Image 1 (tube, rainbow, N blue to C red):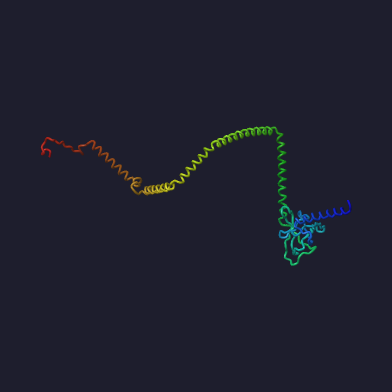
Image 2 (cartoon, rainbow, N blue to C red):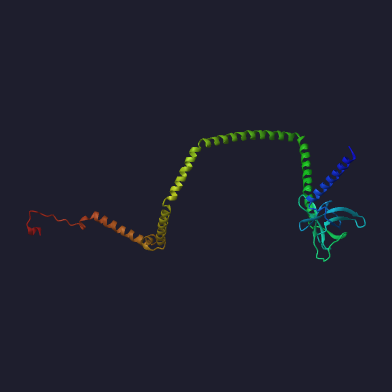
Length: 306
């Protein structure tokens, strides 16, 4: 292989690496061939912030995290940011560490200030952490803690079960439980067979069931199309009239009301009945007192007849 081919391969290799680096940053929304402003931010803790974590302004990617450096004097972490030069950021702005999207992880969000001067190379911004960031970390760790506690409880339960299995009484109970499960399974199989038979009968009588449903629909349609509403209205009127008669009787007005609630008519009728009985009895015993019969002689004279 001659020298020219080696140089060509080296150039292609370097260009490929550069193109790959440019492609990755292009997908992240960074402009490689544009000027960047270097800005520093000091944090007490980075909370999982990594190199190339995006810097966002109003949801737009305007830069990235370039480097971390531990400051031994005050035990802080100094973060170097690369921000696009054409973005004007007030000097009193805040670099807030917060959670990004699911794939972004941790990001730095720029909270704009109201200063008239804008950041330049090697300027510092005030660093803060989102108030709910520690809560988010706690929420992320809480399920792991609960799962660990549940796992330990399960392990303890499993150990207790294995210890109890060695007990003869527990072994007998376990055997009885298995036998009961077998009996239950047999009963369940029989029930399933009965259900299958019922389903077969229903399927065999499907035409009859459809005919019954059709007849019921015809009956309901007949009732719907009949003058049932008129009959009900007439019945309601009759009930209303009957209620008026009952109310009149309850008010003790009219002959029926007086007959029910006034006993004088009862006593009068009773007395009249007794008098009629006396009269009939006397008529039976002394008929001549009430009936006067004369024998008429057809052979006598008219004077005698008179």
